[in-house]
Image (cartoon, rainbow, N blue to C red; front, side, top):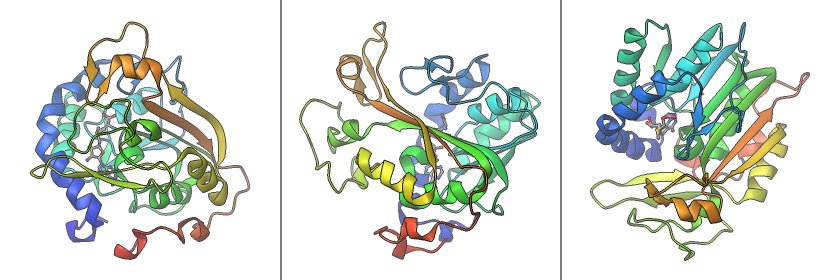
Length: 282
Ligand SMILES: C[S@@+](CC[C@H](N)C(=O)[O-])C[C@H]1O[C@@H](n2cnc3c(N)ncnc32)[C@H](O)[C@@H]1O
């Protein structure tokens, strides 16, 4: 999929949001490309403490779902991946990723599209990752089954994004998160945020529903992390004050695997109760 009209409605909104903000993220992306060791999320937790990316990807095909400026693709390449694909609906973000790939002389395949419908055949990849890409901006009831479809048996999926609790506490106007619950935990899935002139849509699920989704699809949960800001963190990272993130998990991360011998077919039962599914086809 790369025709804009084929993007689901929330992805049209989020594409416009990310095209507006891509330039603000150029420097963050550039810093990521300069890093020798990956670090994750708002608090830049080193991969040695939060091991989302295996040290050795040699001989494996890898994809970054919501690649932005492409630094995770670069880290995959550095770790020996045989091929690296990044997908993102924001053409401005992809322009930055392309420029950095040229600068670093790295061959990446960058696709303009959404993680909910990746235009690649079943069982194309051994490893998939998302840092604040699909993991926040795409509908999990669609993109998680899609990641399963894309992975070969034995493949792995890691992702990190904001925590369910942080989204429940997020004020609608983009202000800092506090200790007041702003919306219900039960029923949480799709949340429209941002000011009128810059709206965006993010997704999350109650923790038990994440587990239920993985179980329905067939993913094994290898690890689940509630990320705590380090003692050295100060100030505010985007919407999250550091002192909040020392008291509560502001981010959550998962490591999943698709068992050897899994059926390859799309796990259609996983998406039957998806309320946004009717709005578009995949
Ligand atoms: C905060 S940036 C993260 C970029 C990168 N993963 C990183 O670690 O810096 C979020 C990215 O998710 C992308 N995105 C938004 N909706 C998406 C979707 N449905 N599928 C895949 N990526 C999406 C945005 O265009 C944006 O580039």
